[in-house]
Image (cartoon, rainbow, N blue to C red; front, side, top):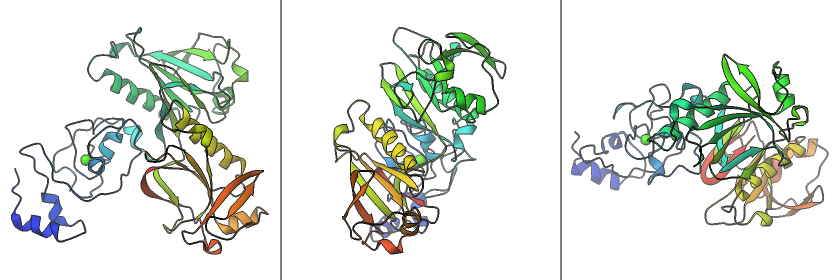
Length: 377
Ligand SMILES: [Ca+2]
């Protein structure tokens, strides 16, 4: 039990920066905490992370109450495991640990990003190659934390097989009590990882690592024609799709390596307004990333903006002046908010945060945490 002195409260009220004083401000005796200044979240949060105070995620304090220590909230931003906790506002372990995260999910170079409530489909909307398994030990999925455990295990299974697994599809349907997990890929990715199909048929069996899966291939069992192409979401009740990203930098703006603004070309996707409807948000992500890949000669990152106050999603193609020029392209308007045509499509140019395009330098990039912004490399 900790006593909060009036002196330290007065100190906090008069000061603007986080100090060691704040490490003692979280009351435990009433299961309540005193508000602390906003800090950056260091892990990837799902849009379905539903907690009253996002600032508590990644603050170094394991929040055992509420929905903080869940896969959707990136296991309280790592606060609840000794090997993932980063000291921040609080000293790690102040409130103990409660490690529930599969160890593979703590690897920040690979993460599972919630795409939406539906099936994982190919970029063209067709069925990909899937290996499906039921988790009978988590039956029924409606009981307790079984659904959360299914999601965590399925994501971890896909991440373990990230050489070829492109997405994890979790099925918790009303009419099936056993939850299911599908590891999603396409034929070229699977073969490139040195693996071979044991049954090139719809519903055929496949043994991987001593575990039996059922194989589902494209439409009608034609595995060879599957082509993931970045994936898409096909809305369906009882299904969840998580993209396994090796390049999701996290929720925030794509900035230069030095933290300053890069050169960006912006476009609004009016046909996907509002981004909160159906698969619109997911489509905005896959479309923006695909456009950046098409322009990989100069596009360093794709920034997708789905802010709650703006119903229209935006896409920013991120680069710097030297990369853009090296690709043989020229700025049509070297001004803040100038227009630029790329591939016959009109974009708005934003340079360096102040309109000075020539001084932009990507330098590997960095992430500036900001709600509603998502940066992909
Ligand atoms: Ca926390």
